[in-house]
Length: 224
Length: 324
Length: 82
Image 1 (cartoon, rainbow over the protein chains, first blue to last red):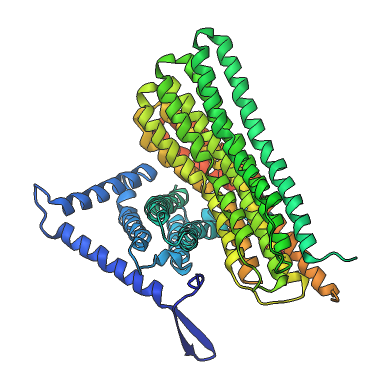
Image 2: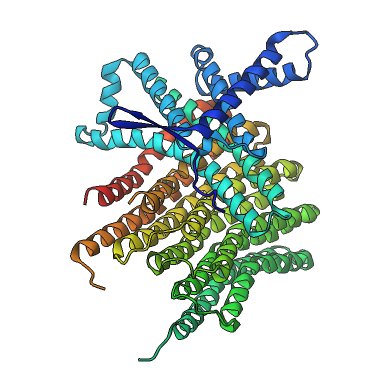
């Protein structure tokens, strides 16, 4: 029970400030990156006409997500963003599922991961919006319906980052805390495997998909 | 006056028991009434199917009643258990337990009534699929009960946790806030889950060939509709299990109480809204099964956005617990 | 125990913040859900326009969410400024 809210941190003094590293999240993110690199390597190493299981899985994910991107954007712009969306989805699924294994923690349980991914999507969406529409048309959008609504429109845009990142964080963190508390109350008998199946596998996959879709849709709203 | 802590604990337990059963009866009564109304209307359309309709009405009502039975159990425990008055925190704890279960049973009761009513109507329209309809109705209304089970868990934890090592203030506000958080947040998700299940029963009656798809999409929609209730459960776990520094000031206590109220009220709307969104998805998957992929994708995005105000409430609630 | 004025003000601000965000979240939640339900209906009727419908739904939801964002702003002001 004492694990609740404990974080493994490295604090480095940096002038007058302190830099805090959440080692758990960093380590787990590296593990996820390593898994994904390995998967990519194995899937693309020997491309055959009769693909092996890993190549099939890779092709399935990539083709599905390219199709998804094409539906949301159009044929011309989709290939530009599809790799980003594909990488985001695979990273998030791996991050959310890694908590299934004992002594592993989801990097998404640390607010820094979803928040930085949310900011990444935000910056990319707005940058491509400016590229597609021009800076004037982009800025004029904030002045709808009248110019003094601009501050609230800007807060509305920023709130999207808050909602997209806290949605992922809240679901994953909530799942892990609930698993922890219920396992503690039931002395880890019977219930935890089912809770793991629901919160980690099911909710993890759904939330990864929702995060990816929302990033994609935010880009498509800005681009068109 | 010579009122000791034991007296106050008993007072709180009796009031809490009254609230648990009083509020707990609201939802089930509304839900069962809705089911009965739909069943009567169904029988009036086709008297031959009366036997099947009445059977499924009774089964549906029995499930809708389970939230209320949880409330009865908690009320009985509150009335007949002699709670040890080791600390004054027991007073808000037993009261919060009643509050959590009472308010938490409203949504599940109302929600579980919807699919049962819709199944009765569907049975008259398509008597051949009444078995599929009953199965789907049972699954749907059983999932509706999830938020009320969360509320039951929280009220048991509140009743049987030993708070004697905790500082009186602000723990009293934390346990009260936990009761509000799990109770109020269960309303929206219960009703929302019911709306989804209602549309799926309707859809199966319209398009029996698509039963498997419809049931799967219903389960997906209901699972996501539970998110606001899960957020409420999360905040109430944090409120109960976090340790606080003792302080006699009012502000820290009020922050914890406000945190519970914030996520509790904030989860009602998104819970219902996500249910409505997902019911739209389920209804149109039934009508246009070929395009399930597109509809489900849009449904997920729409539900995620409808959830965002619950997320804002979660942010404010967490700020109230951890920052201020 | 003596309760000071500043303490009561802080307590009231916290309570106000919680209620502002909590109650303010109800309306937008239901409203956005209705928008999404209608969008699903529209896609069921006309699946070809999926991209356009998604964008339209999101713009509509963003507008109906604005009251929720006002609540968030007020709650944050109550917590950190007042």
